[in-house]
Amino acid sequence: MNINIIGIIALIAGVIWGIVVNKIIQEKGYTENWFCWGFFFGIFALIAALRKPDISQEEYEEQFEEKEEELLN
Image (cartoon, rainbow, N blue to C red; front, side, top):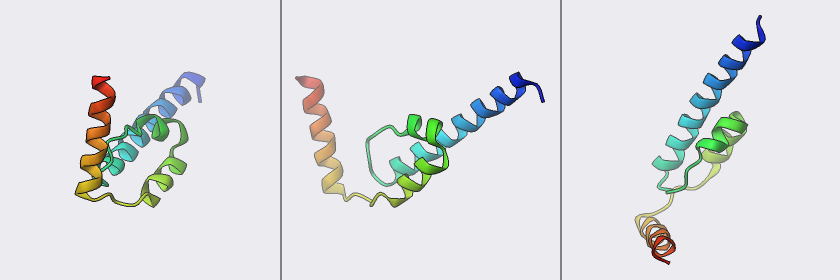
């Protein structure tokens, strides 16, 4: 196999892992962006994302307020 084809396949796989891991984190209620974790660490980032607990609506609102304060300061 040509090295360019392997690189393209690795890039596509990284993008897919990034999207999947980020989607799982968002569905658990987190506002963090985990795309890079998924892109670079693949299955390990997926396992970490699945092990994170779901957050409640109150915790989500607290995270949102903290992010908002960071942006305003």
